[in-house]
Length: 208
Image (cartoon, rainbow, N blue to C red; front, side, top):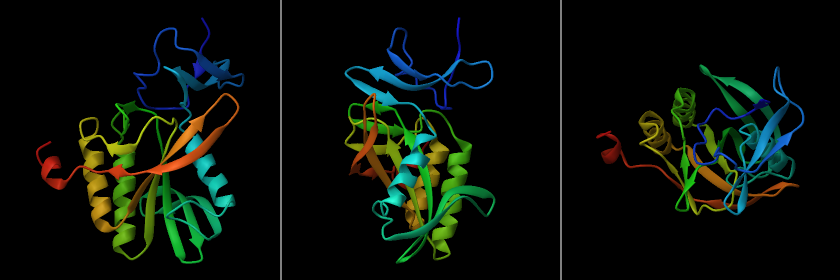
């Protein structure tokens, strides 16, 4: 039996099925012989590399940014803000943004669902960005849906009610939540189009 490294802390239950075709990069970590990057799901490839969104976002920054963060002048990675580390501080012609990038691989009936496992750190980051927005800074969370069969992304209150509450607090504070689809092939991954992000209303979250 050979083991591979999975660069993803999610459960991926709908993807990691017996006999599912996969693609493995031949460079592993520790006792693993490679890194699992792609899983075939139905008729399409899905990227399971949760580190990829940072690289996709940085490529977008080199090209000038993606809405809502455009006219990029410069950026820093992994900056400290409050008690958390935020992925990017981006200086634009219109001001400074704090940007957190996220990966999403789970899609049900055309809806991308995040997260697929509880993430206390994700809730803390959303609340930190909410504080930044309340203090007058610009803040955004950008999800990269690493597949192309979704028409919107929804914060899944059943999988992680605390993150959904933090998402609602962030939106109410002025944090922008955005999501982009990705076209995934064996040769490349390309950002294709933006889709809306849905956050459960407070009246529903209070009962969870």
